Length: 451
Ligand code: AMP
Image 1 (cartoon, rainbow, N blue to C red):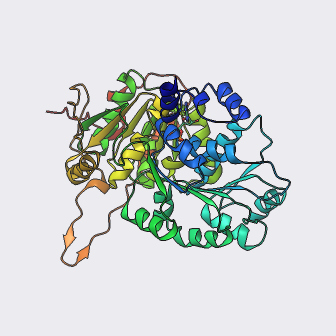
Image 2: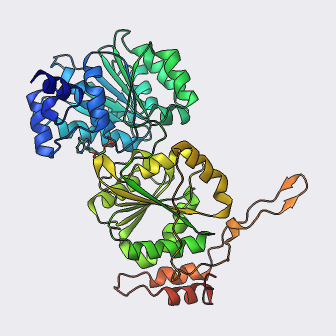
């Protein structure tokens, strides 16, 4: 009936309800994607109408397909070798992920897609661009360099996507974006995606776009409904390590676990702690690691070689890992929006997930910021009694002694004999991890039980 046709247009139930092209439907069939996610359904017709669009959507909501589908739908084959679709993203990992998504959708189309990013040889990338591309995905700095040296012509780019504009701006890419705009044709369609509408993002949008249509996956700041969130009160690093061991042994589905820590140094430290018990099934990724190492870590995590991946915020944003069963905030994020990003890595594209957060006393402020952003409280569960808590603080956790007018520098954690010993023991043998013995070996005394 007329009503059901209208309703299906407004609330598309399947991808067949969207006015896509056959090659795209076929690709979606092959992928087994049937139902558009909220952001895909909400933005498709707006984008197809050619209007500038702002999408408020977090990672895991299907936002990448939300812009790729209409872009590819409006794309027309041209003999011209310059990209018609330009997708600007903040990190190299995201470049790789978006290129993959475009490739997944275009096995039945004659579309050439390529990715460019900094930190690698520019000549190789310039040569790829000069061979001719229909879709170019890249980080702002490298896109600008290629445009400025003439290898990349942007005057045919009619569809311009800026993904994760909030992150792009907070990484300090504003000037590069503005300069890229100068290379673009005036008549173009802009599609901008952001996880949150911060003041910085709003100002940027207002200054550069005229009345874009706004579509949202979920109200900005709301945690995705299909993620079960749990908090545990855990006082310090060593206790958190015990809790992490416990969760990895006892959580029903802990087959793909993403663990977030505060800093690169902590990521490495936690990796060393976990390595001996998880043998070769744990990886670490942060921005101090070489590009190859980062790609390999993500690849190993995605394919299941690594059961656990330890990561810092920035890197985790761009990585494409599906079916993360459990996100653990080993450290609570200082920036409340990052909490949403982190937990958004599980429960992706309408799959259920669990997000667990360790909260210590000094995290009270950060926690209340997160709770007010979500407009809900984080439900807490008691730490099981068999998990051994300790009062022992590592050097970096100890309160910094204050000399009037001067701040004492934190002493670096010593890499003592315990670590060498662990390295030697760290061979591929399948012994069950004996926690008590490990503690004895490591600290020379049993850890005190929690009261
Ligand atoms: P994104 O939010 O763009 O990072 O996408 C999250 C993941 O969900 C990606 O691996 C997509 O390929 C996948 N995905 C996106 N849209 C759908 C959909 N409608 N159905 C099933 N999976 C999807």
